[in-house]
Image 1 (cartoon, rainbow, N blue to C red):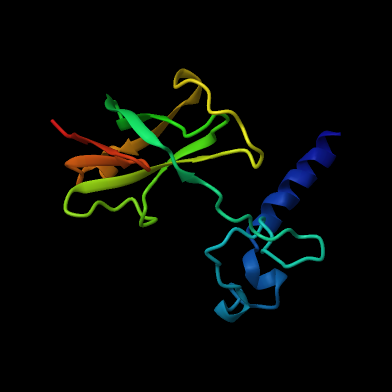
Image 2: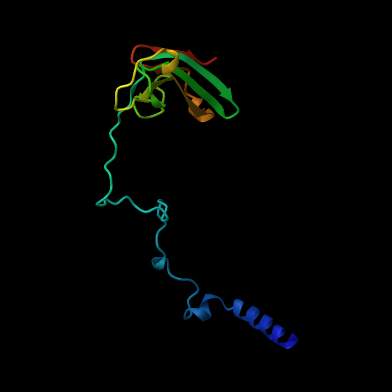
Length: 166
């Protein structure tokens, strides 16, 4: 047993020192032409392919909330959270989101403009009381995103609210 272990250990040490030269016909390393370029995309995620059963992208059915009633900006250790409250035009509002109207979070002249958008069910719902139509949403911003922002404006269908940085 000791002789076999000694021989295997010595053989593995000798073979590990051989390198590319003896294994692959005298070359030190494979030429650079054999190496595939590294892609910026993740190879584990398949590319989007049109398929027979693939659904088309859903149309944006969100609308501006009827009225913005509250805007609050709370500081966090990593930046700030923008909290907005609004009242929908009828009951059943869901999927509230604060989105920039231009599609980018880049402020114009230090003003970050956000639309308060919600979705409603496709069927008719009652109007109800204001308390039953309240909707809340928040948006987290990092310190880097807050660097150029002096004022935040949240827009609804009937009004807009603003808050300045202190």
